[in-house]
Each structure stands twice: as structure tokens, then as C-alpha cells.
Length: 74
Image (cartoon, rainbow, N blue to C red; front, side, top):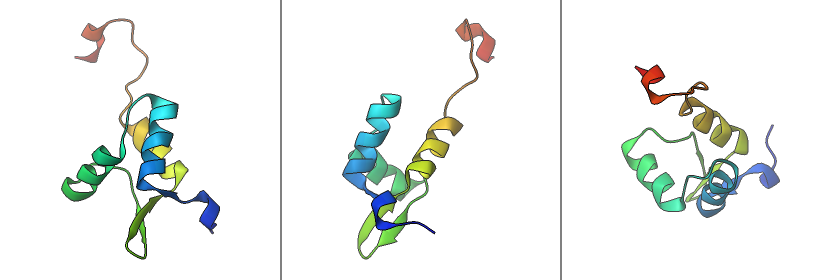
């Protein structure tokens, strides 16, 4: 079960992603919540909230394997 301390509002979730992965913003999360493709979130009343583990899972799913050349991605 989650506790209120583990839930991040959108601005804090964007800061979390930026500090851990170097990418992310509240605006990007808002857009992805509308068009799809973003991390899982919940609603707490009218506010979208994110679990850090869901943000980590989303970032991990967008990260490639280790490579030494971009030609390895094809």
C-alpha cells in the first residue's frame, strides 16, 4: 500500500525525472498524460500524482541497452 509521502505531484515528478535521468518536466508529463506514452499516474482528487517507482519504470523502458556506437541500434 502506498503512503501519501510516496506520491509526487506533477511538478515534483518532473523534478524527480530531471534529477535522476536528466530529462523530464511537468509540461512533458502533462502532454503525455493527454496523448499517451507517459508514466503511469493516479488521481488524488483533481491532481495527477506519480509514484517514484512508476517514473523509474517508465524511464527504464525508454533507455536503450549499453552501446559503444549508434550503429549498434539498427
